[in-house]
Image 1 (cartoon, rainbow, N blue to C red):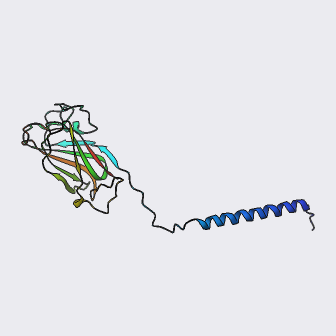
Image 2 (image 1 turned 90 degrees about the horizontal axis):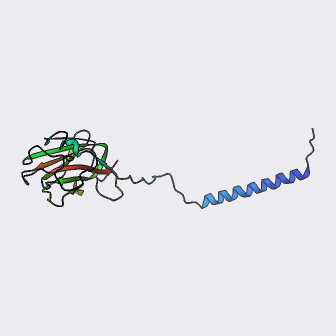
Length: 207
């Protein structure tokens, strides 16, 4: 059966087809000009640094409860100056060997531990970090300075104990070879003969 076709309609179809072919050719030419990215390996995004305060804490002793208890060392700092303040943790005697242990909500490859002290600074003797299985690593051991007060002891991961396969943070600081969930702070208050009060502890690292 013969179906009559309008010549004008046929010319329009041919013109549209030619335009489409030209457009496709231009798109293919543009794609050919793009660089070949290959199939990988694709660059790995640099993980962002996470800073967090302790979620819970225990200690060898405390001056009282709830004031000066280990829980006072959780969360962000809330003691504004250098003073004997019940909002910070203090040991029971203030003249012997003590410890404060803190846990954090998000395990991270640690870069720094920042210990915010508000009174009697100078007794800190060791900082150890642990993973969820209890594996420990001493980051620092020595004598803290007594000033300034209030002040922050910043403990960084020594390059000799860092693991090169762990994530690299944006600032390039070394990280621990495992994800840290717990920090233990040892004190020898016989060095100062007084209470070394700790207001907060901050853990900095990459997930």
